[in-house]
Figure (tube, rainbow, N blue to C red):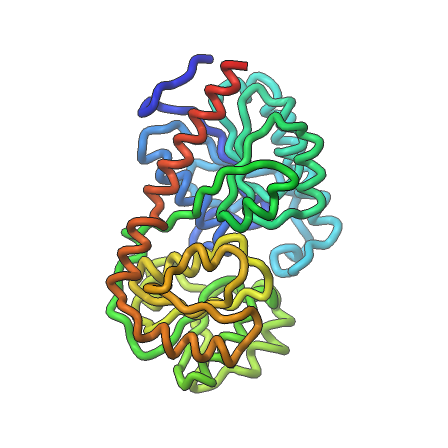
Length: 363
């Protein structure tokens, strides 16, 4: 194997999450980031092999991870996956890692792990190519354990400075902010309503967005996949009405039109969001953001493009909505183009691929 100089074609093995397909409409930010990363790398001339969940976009040429058929697809709608889902995922990644530890792995220059599973990290030392893992979550005990088993043979990136700091006592990582394809999230005209988008689960707290928008006197439209049906039925649905409507799980172009036609995007994580892709998408559409100040979200926003509220403080969030609607939409778009773009993200990952490959060859 020889080190490819900058601009040369790399052979990249991209490992995705096996629970949700890498296909539109995306289940969440992880799936969106992985799809856009793969697509842009191919566009730049790299050879990319994607290993992803069944049902992933055929245009990626993805190899489906061998996940056993799950009864009633229960794991796709539960916040916590039941044991048989965990076993199926374990076997899927074990099969892949054993496959890549042989001659098939030697076909790649680098493996980029975008899964949330522990095995690609724990078994990295058995692979013939260097491994770069992107940390998409705060430290989870099973992934933390895998990092310790890995013993320093892998390299790590983190989706925000906040996430990098959370992992700092376990492993060093390079911050690479997730990027948005600004051509697919065009600047919109704005409007009179607020928008909330994302996975409809309790940890995203869309009910707070409804309560805050109502308090601010701004109608709100919600969009996204319902992954916790009990939460939707018992908490969110009773709050819906003429001033708070659910638009469904929209295709990307329809969601971009909705976000770009809104006066403000509301982001309400009930946990420390590792990044906050929906905020970056909103800024690309020229739509200012009112958000809880949790996790990586303060890194996505600036005083020109959003307003932050204390976590869980609905009255403060209502005030943030009222202030955010007055912000300059052009400045929001400019920030997305300059700091939060897909181009910027992939530039950085190309640098990291060459770095980890160079260090492996020099060892």
